[in-house]
Image 1 (tube, one colour):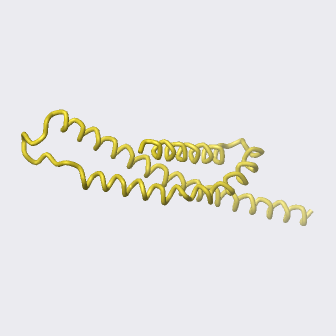
Image 2 (image 1 turned 45 degrees about the vertical axis):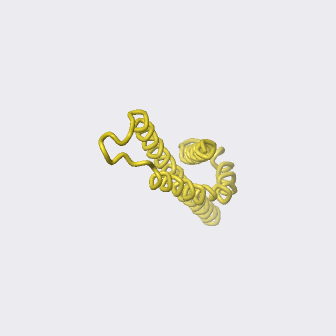
Image 3 (image 1 turned 90 degrees about the vertical axis):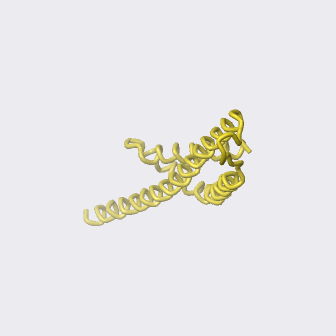
Amino acid sequence: MALEWVVLGYAAGAEAIMLLLLTLPGLDGLRRGMISVVRSALKPMMSVVPFCLFLLMDIYWKYETRPTCDDEHACTPSEHLRHQKSIMKSQRNALLIAAALLLYWILFSVTALVVKLDQLQQRVDKLKKRDD
């Protein structure tokens, strides 16, 4: 099951890199090309959302079916340690899910704003040419 977390990590990393390249100042020439790349990549990257929901359900299922150590001497120390490690991994994976979803939403919003900004800049340039 580790492969899906690696895939989600790479997807979140790709989203972060695209977001960084779109928002860095001074990269106007690169930004125009990145806009078309990001806009074409947003629809396939939408698959991150159901994938994250599936992984979230997996975390929930593991949480519901975990062994419980209600009594003081019900679990051995190694079982208790394994249980604690499992909880830490689940928390890490939940943070990865939240980061991937948040980065996708921010990338979608920033891309829409950058496209709108380019359209408005083209309108301003067209009006300036017409006035001259």
